[in-house]
Length: 249
Image 1: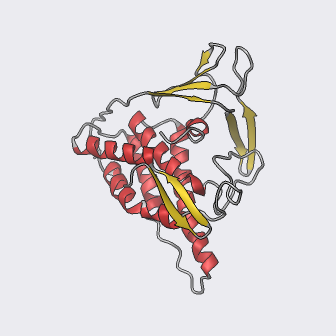
Image 2: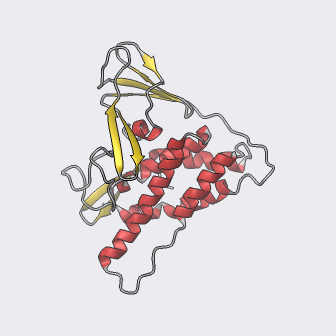
Image 3: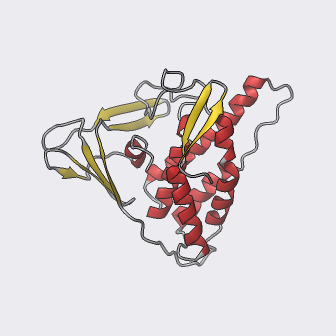
């Protein structure tokens, strides 16, 4: 697993994959699992199994695949990996170390949030620079993303099989973190397929929207501190709605 920010070339120029958090959390997970200090609970195993299924998913076999169809299939596999990680992260059922790992996976595969299939509503979440703008290439760095798959497959294979039936779960502590963020956070809902709602979070005390917020998180509870002094964890924001807007930590 590479560490830090790694720049990889694409068909339309260089693109950075944010792998600092992934390198840190993957290395930590390996050490904890190898030492027996992390015996995942059933929710962790279920999430790991779902992510593993995406990691090892074969590409479709097509009789007369065009280059465009092959490229789309490759990107769709990575997009499904991202969405599976986000689903289990935001469901809130996994332990803190599993949440930290899933969040790091999501951060690394963020370029596939809207590639090849963007969410079908204007209110759907948008993270980072939209593909095709002046700040980013129109083509996701697919080669770079696929280079991460073997190491992740090995890690999630261990995680998915680390707790045989009857094993008593053991969850190691995770260091909390705190960071300041100037900008707005958006709460997103999906009442039905293809329908999204969005609402800007406002400080319950002063109504402020843009911060700078003091974000504190221990992977169980996340609080937002407003410049007015109010601190709240009753913001209804998903982990991804905060984490994916912050710098790669």
